[in-house]
Image (cartoon, rainbow, N blue to C red; front, side, top):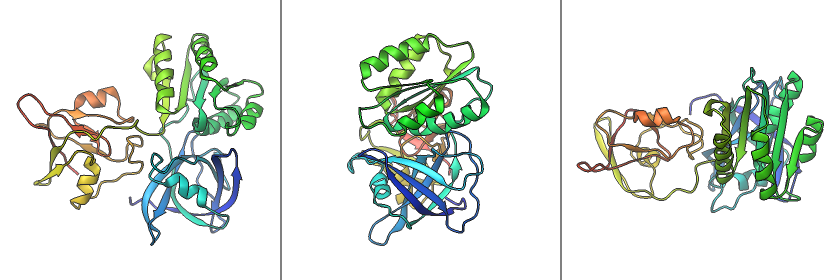
Length: 328
């Protein structure tokens, strides 16, 4: 990744819940920070290994002030090391005040639609984080906004802040049955031109999408911010041709990993099929792509001319083994 990084220092740490930690980051030189659009995330360099070399890049939603901020705020759920984002959350939870970190400037794939009649924000658990910056901006713009959130009792980060910001237009519940009933009701009782924004675990967002479709919401008015692809099976082996070289991609190894192992540089960030950074063109003559990302549109996937190298694979056909031809 060639983008210039921002040097930051940890200036504040708060335990919002037993498992969620808020981290406040300020510029090391005391200068200004780039403004960002609501729904943006900050990509932190995550050092791993004894040498603390930069090896990972994890994205965390920005929750603070979006306009001319003097600090960046993120809230991070500590995940199981076996299932978390490659240890990124554990590293964030190990930070101390005074620690220095590096980050790419804020990026956004989840911005609000300014011309919407109303904004309906629906989140679960740590999925409140990108919705919080949406909420701040809607309050500033005096926009019509409503928030529905579900979280476990005692584990809801930013709940008091959300309730205060909405002036009572937020509904927070603690059991899924109540949430499901409220979701179905609220999706069927919105003014024309309302846009829906949702963030949370994969199963939760699947429910929101299904209920929205059942209520007749057009796809272009439903916006989602995903944590990552659902747990994926190892997949079948396939081959890939790139720059005159043919590379084997074994089961359990991603195309991105195979390309990197062969010495090819592929821009990437999340490695979970979410950010869109590792999009790779696929040439005619390839077998169909098994798309497993959460970034490409249905039209992109149907075209079979690109893929996300971190999660997608090749599919065999009746007369050809699984094979891709890509350009970098």
